[in-house]
Length: 187
Figure 1 (cartoon, rainbow, N blue to C red):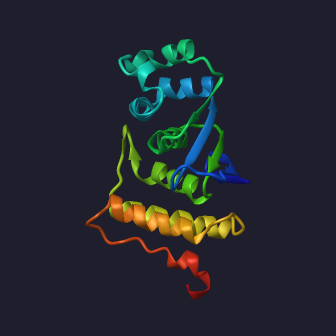
Figure 2: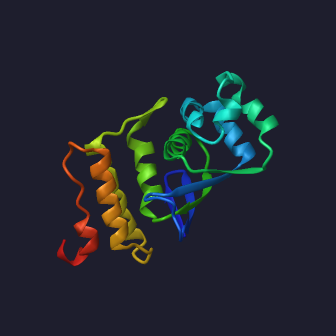
């Protein structure tokens, strides 16, 4: 299935055995990622929190792309880090041209959620997220997903896990309630 937002198209596949709530993977070519390393400070910043950290940790930002092209052995890579995925989306939204990414995810709402963060909460080399922003992005992404992809699998377990993880992450914030997705006929 495909989700398109502005100049970005996501080819989305359902990840049947996610490792955690919100598990999303972006698959892209080595060259595509190297191009983002050349041009985007947000990608350079968040690459340090991924499996590429050992390779690029002490490399000057101007040299990251060249080092990556020379030292990364595979022709494709899979990114699991949500901040890095958001950074890539944010960078693409600022560029001319069309971009297509292969996404594997637990639920279609997650890549939509990340796209919303990229469009509204990322600026320069920073992604701004606090409890109210996160609550709004989660709810909006589920509303979009329900409207555009009504048959994409979702479970009460997904919603329960999401509510609990939100409580854990934002302990002093107003809770997250996803009842409108459990019982849509009441809303």
